[in-house]
Length: 190
Image 1 (cartoon, rainbow, N blue to C red):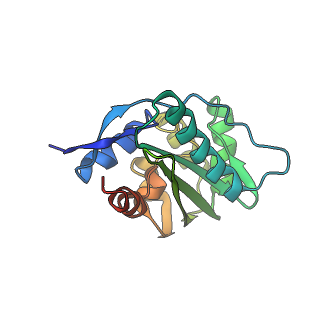
Image 2: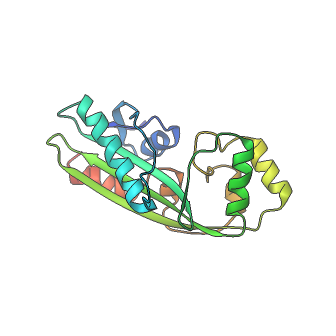
Image 3: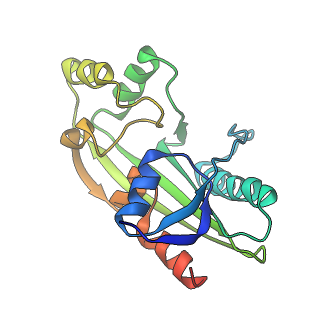
């Protein structure tokens, strides 16, 4: 059983909640941040993911003043293109074709706003190399549906068998870089 800690998680992501429970850092409350996640014109991946994590934390901190609020954002980036959640199977097919045989990045930014309003933020980039996917592998992945609700894919599912190489944070690819998250929380005495 995870220990309940003195912070609010600004996310309803089942993956993030499971990761926090895995390391015994259960939030005292889960309050997903409902914010506009649109990219600004000409916004690059790193500033975008950092802005999203900060804005999610700020949104919940405004609703719950004098609380510790933890937020995170994770994106998949191919070249300079930020991938967003696919709306349908056809869009997911295009995503899988784009990832096939290429190295891409998964960037996660975690942000804590403490009870006094101080911001701590860490960002992690992980390089992922996907095997060259056959048309059948693409169809099988799209049909399995585990890509619903995430940007690009779920590494903790079927896709794990299609990744040739990963350099960086596995938990960051899942959706919350645990090493950086725990350092931020413990640094605030949480």
